Image (cartoon, rainbow, N blue to C red; front, side):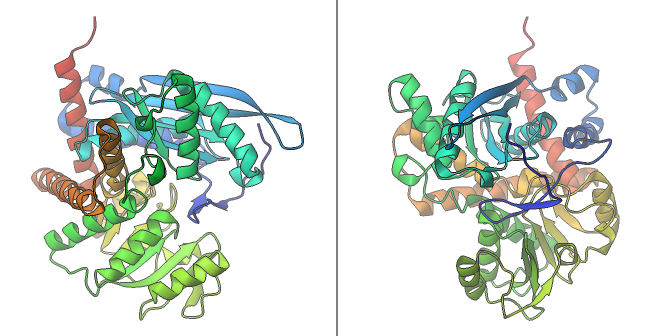
Length: 437
């Protein structure tokens, strides 16, 4: 495995903030299970159901060699985990990051199961990744590693079995390499084996913007139900990669005032609002938001507690914790990242009256449009971008209302309500299928 030095903060190839997820004594999977049991208690699930749903159905770990540009050989470790497939083929991204571990992948695969169930698309949950810092690899090394990994996990993936997609540090090009490798072994093109691939090889229009767009659709519906307008609201976005930048631009286009943005280099803040076009131009030129002249510099820690109405964490896990949750000023948090809020922080925010749109709902736009891409591949029929965006909005609004009604009925947080909805749908599907033998 490539030797890398893990810093407390890193940056992905798409510009999002990344933090080390290591937390002594408790893994990300422990957190996912803790969240699950809150929903299981409300649903009064017995030990058997809890045992089924707190275990992943399949776990594959692979150690594989790759020839580097200098002729040396490096061995990399990768994973593909399927949490549950009762509601359909497994679905979930692949991430390339030095902190990838089996427990992280387990947690993310469980969250994918709930995410697909919340928006009611016919997928189960999966996740995968390679423990590597991809910035240390040349393009040719990245391709060779990706293709070898695709061959290693081909025993699990397939258009009717398990469909990978981009995640942290993976791109449409990487999906194209996986598609080509799988198709070579199949002897024919299999465009449905991955989603998030380039449009010219069967990808869907609207997919790159889907997660950020879905976040804004979720915010708009939450604002409508909460009685305050997105127009004029102050918005802070942590992470200015693909998801965060799209969410920021769309929020601004809807009339919000984006006052704070950050990436790995730090943050920028202007209480009068940032000129989004200028920020995007500056970032394209300089590679980061640092040095933008129309704002004051702030740290990433300061950014999360800036005065605002809406906070969009679009980085990685464990950004809002018991150490900073009480300083968060936002009325509404929309989790564009996976797992940005710890359970301890959830309790603090709930007691403060902060509405949290949980990751398994708020960032489900990506997997929803991945579902659309998969359907288009199976049908060999492309949809227009207007059709993709319209269908996405319909699903996000419907899912919000489903979650909101459960939250009101049980007087629980939106996260727990989303989990209750998702877990019940998975349990119902499993009960209908039966336990064999």
